[in-house]
Amino acid sequence: MGNQVGGGRRSRPAVEERYTRPQGLYPHPDIDLKKLRRLILEAKLAPCFPGSDDPRPDLDECPICFLFYPSLNRSKCCAKGICTECFLQMRTPTSCRPTQCPYCKMVSYAVEYRGVKTKEEKGNEQIEEQRVIEAQIRMRQQELQDDAERMKKKQAAALTNEVTTAQVEHCDTGGASTTGSGSLGKSNLH
Image 1 (cartoon, rainbow, N blue to C red):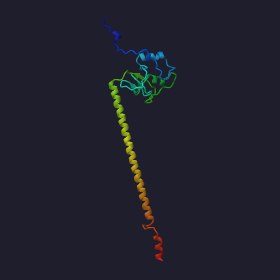
Image 2 (cartoon, helix red, strand yellow):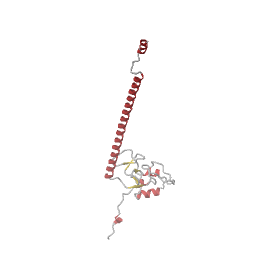
Image 3 (cartoon, rainbow, N blue to C red):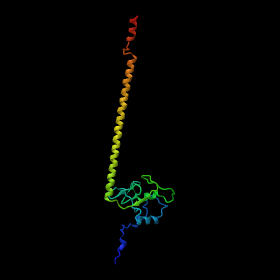
Image 4 (cartoon, one colour):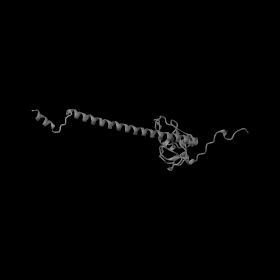
């Protein structure tokens, strides 16, 4: 009578069986397919959707394979996206060494699946990307300005060197002209 159907838990959208195993992007001979299926059905890993070459606003790009997916796993350390097949390629079950995050190099790399990104998350990502682009532009402008200042200093140093050389030559001759007048002056003295 007072019982709720489903125990009041939030229902997860059902994952089609074909998305609970790798789609063939990489060979995965050591993968425990039953464990992978369970992790996907429990929403601990993103489904193994086939990747698309065509970007669309409703798809996210995996920065490792550059394919587009309806949703990605996210690194626990830096929240960067990664598709399940790329994650499986990095996390080989036979390795004893901890895996590093491919983005921030944090040791003991792990991911979580949060579902499809919200509009707010996508908007925040775009803002962050815009800030990065603006910072890169500012850095490049500063480099160009520094290069221009270095060139001015080099030109000023070269000009100063030329003036100094001309003054030294003028001092060596005592200010007198050296074009044939030296022989005439000696003959007039004797």
